[in-house]
Image (cartoon, rainbow over the protein chains, first blue to last red):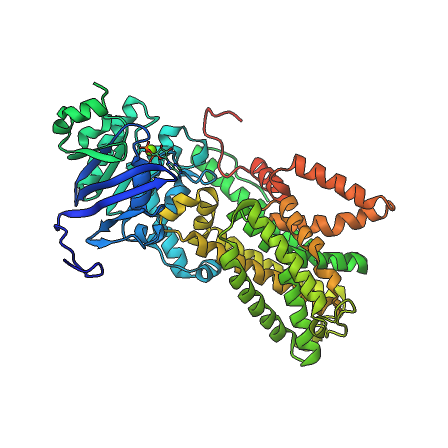
Length: 263
Length: 340
Ligand SMILES: Nc1ncnc2c1ncn2[C@@H]1O[C@H](COP(=O)(O)OP(=O)(O)O)[C@@H](O)[C@H]1O
Ligand SMILES: [Mg+2]
């Protein structure tokens, strides 16, 4: 056995994130029961399950908004239970939300600039005085925002207030903003809900592209449309993982068909 | 001065931008000229009100920044205004310190107080946070009253020396006017920079969607505490200068009503724009004075004017000015086909 604070655990080097026997209940409601899950470095890993299965709760635990009652989240081979959301983000773990959380009173461009926050380091004093360092960093952030806007086809709406966008574009913006600082692990909570068919196709293309560039993607959805691009799919049902493997195999699993497809 | 006739779209764009700059510069120059001439033509009493406008604009800018950029309602500014004023009163009269040393001490104490109080209190949000700051203002007022060795209690502290700059004593409203307004302008410039910087984006991000800000690596709590401290520093600065200016401070100046008027000026002026609190400060200092000429009903009238202002100018006066400026001189000519 390795100690918890040892630099390396027995984690196989291919796992970027591991959820180990995580349980969570709200009052008497057991939302997660000893959930295990592994996200391989460089993969697109899916998590599906009916509404109320506990997917968003698991997401909140992975990203640090909630603490698990029992179990561990291991990132880069280290338990991160005591690490804050902000520090997880700085370590490259970034998520989106089931209801899009754009900065409504900022334009799309400004949302993207804000997304670059952790790439800079100028302090408030330097910012107030408009010192060269602060100006240079802001200019870099703005350039990066422009490139990202172009890449995600957000250029036509770059100067629109994000709060005024239709939900599909808000989701796209949230994805672009999450991806702009090159996270290592990008976690997406129901990125396809509220999108039309074309938008879902575009989303799948973007995710595959980001993944090819080396980003690990953790994808949560209650529907199966997007799961085609995932190498491994986990199925969560009533707080337990009932299947895990390639999408085709999971789809054929009788327990999954019974529990999830209602067949 | 002639403007080139519009020939081609490119030329039109150029001319438009130049024209906009030109008008802006002309307005700014005219503004400065009027600003410089005002003390020569206005009565001493009115210049005195304009000095107070600047003092309130500095303290109120702190409150407005918290409100407009971070979504924090603070009723605690009177405390920091008071700390600044008493630091100046005490250090200058008891120890004979120069005004700037006392001002710095006041800001250090205010900043430290804001840090120690802000750290736990800013974990609250919404109404609870507003109530906590109100409690702070009340406690501050009581302490100012109780600690009479420092504050002179209800009797106050008198004989605070006036500011002297390079041998020139600022002993009239006119002289103080020429000192305080450039200082206010400097502070507005600093905060304008801040708002349009990396930190400024982080603040507005935090205001609009705190959870998303966290995920992007913005330390929301730390940022709130920093801005609270910054706001306290502005309050303290204004309080210190106030003490030097009026030479006498008493506990009446640092009650909850003063905190309310700082918040009021932020709301009326418009907390989203940096320039807004300036208009708000003018409103809360000049309007009651104008109305008082009508007679005893003036507090009622002021309340009425206030309600009208808030209803018709949801973005505050700063918002109105920004909108008017954009409407008169849009940043770029409307795209073809978009109509006017
Ligand atoms: N903060 C909370 N307090 C109480 N119950 C919660 C809370 N968050 C989620 N739940 C409950 O946990 C269950 C799982 O929710 P969730 O994780 O959002 O599911 P999913 O994302 O899979 O649809 C639901 O029954 C939900 O009502
Ligand atoms: Mg969910």
